Length: 447
Image (tube, rainbow, N blue to C red):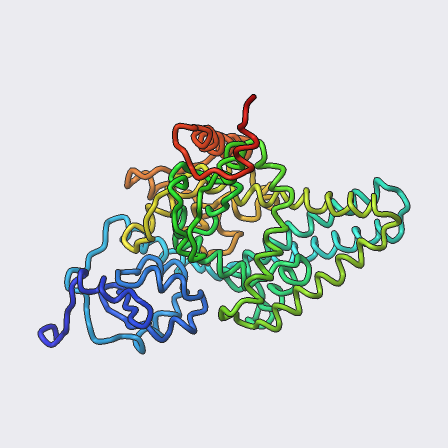
């Protein structure tokens, strides 16, 4: 049996990393996923960017144990001649196996039920405040409560995109569209598309869309060389206008976060109206349209334009807290300029993530993001189990000399602002010229 096996080397495997010719290795067996890329539930980005190498750790992280039985239909008959796994990878896979045996991936608790009830209560209270109260303060509070609703619905959307939060797939899909598209106006398809890419290429400046916020923000001076976004397939040009915005980003960070939701609205429409393959496109569009019916209608119930504007600002500003939370976990962590690899999965996920220390009674506020390292290592693990597995991850990091980054919420904010400030001061260095435009010249003209 051993003598009849066909082998290829890792160098030969690297040649199969182009569309139409996508091979991957999982535990030394080579699979041809060239055709599967179109049907892959996680989108094409993971396969396109991890093809040509061993992807065992990524496969283990993103797929349930039941997925292994489907691999054989992609097996092309080859084995990886020089397959090996690092000690870190072996320990990581052992942890996944132990958590599976403990049933942690199936123990979801009642987090989704409680969150759904909270969302319903916030929605009803916000509507009551608008329709049944005459006070300007009551209307302002109603806007803030709606912002809280969007935050909590965001946690449900996040969880349901990683694992099944409801009893059936159909109900899970219903929860996604309801909390994402209908209640928040954000396409769950867009979120899954970008979020899967973020997990695969955590903190890669060229491949992680969650770090590609030019012209408003950059987390590293490496962006000054106009890197190419391999996710959006375009060059991120660092021109003089971008330099002007980046030079002040540590001041504009929080104000921009208050209205960051506008970008999510725009990105949702851009994807849904594009020629990209979007699963359940009509369903996604109808869900988003429903948001743009009820939300403006609700705002129009307010007595005057002044209160309407205040209501919108209040709802957007409160939701800005969640956008800040998204940034805290990665902006100040280690970054790199390269495509994602399959042989340093554990190291890249831990180095690129920052946990937020908090007591258990504050878990509702952070929505699982307080255990960002654990979430990135075990994305299919229910939110209610993250605190339980944290000690195991800490021990594994300590064993292999890896940093386990954790900070308080306020310290994480300070670290993020410090990162933005450092890049801003580097952008102000006029000894490194960039193409000028009228805005930059106008701001920097003297005399």
